[in-house]
Image 1 (cartoon, rainbow over the protein chains, first blue to last red):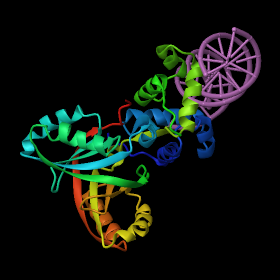
Image 2: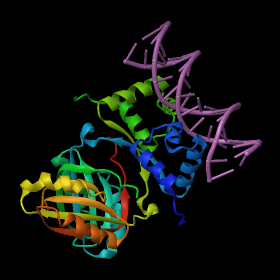
Image 3: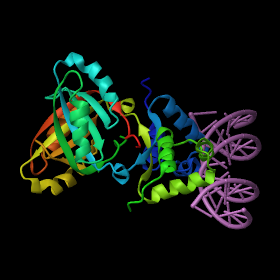
Length: 152
Length: 152
DNA sequence: GTTGAAAAGTGCTGCGA
DNA sequence: TCGCAGCACTTTTCAAC
């Protein structure tokens, strides 16, 4: 699975990351190959697991989800991790969860409607999970950068 | 701009978040309306800024970016924020940057090839930025949850 | 692996209700 | 405002290079 992707693959990824809906024939023209080649390459990249499909970008603030926060979670024992993850998965407000090194056992990113909603999620959903000792909250006042990794 | 989206809009969002490439006519059949209606609704949601288009999902690990980390940044003065953001924008490894409440001034998510690359980014790129006092690193050992907010 | 064209399916637009 | 139908375009496939 350690096939080295070539320059054409990289250029294709770069163009598609800028605009997924661009027509294959249009991309093909820019890269100097045929539309069929673009199709084959993208299929290969998908089969290799490099491309995982496309996702709709929804603006949370526009549908009433104004508060984004990061939560550092302290577990009583590291061994309780798996059980805690399963319970966190049931909380729809959690959009990302990482098992991390450093002060915290886990790190969560959550999206809520307002600060009242955030408090409810913290008090009534997260802090009642077995093994969760305490949490620390960092509310995002502004998302200054949001992008994908650059290819190469 | 506070138009309340109706049930059809919500169902449409839900289906498209599951699969952006699903055919309009197929979605229309499931929701019991015509393909034209789906088109009009999606156009409206886009114009309202709720839908911001689609994005290609690329698996960072598959192209050699194995390390994901969160960096808490301490600034000397909060007022240096804007200048710091501009310099952070030049660092391609930073994929998210938030201005936060709590212990840190800013919170960054960064994607690197390996721990050596991470050390380089921290020492040679982030800690030399004007106003950055020190940083704290949380390496993600596992991303247990990664999803979008649930509609409703 | 790439090409070029043919075949199948999709999104878009105007008209009618 | 919504639904239907035709047109234009795109993706997909496939034989040949």
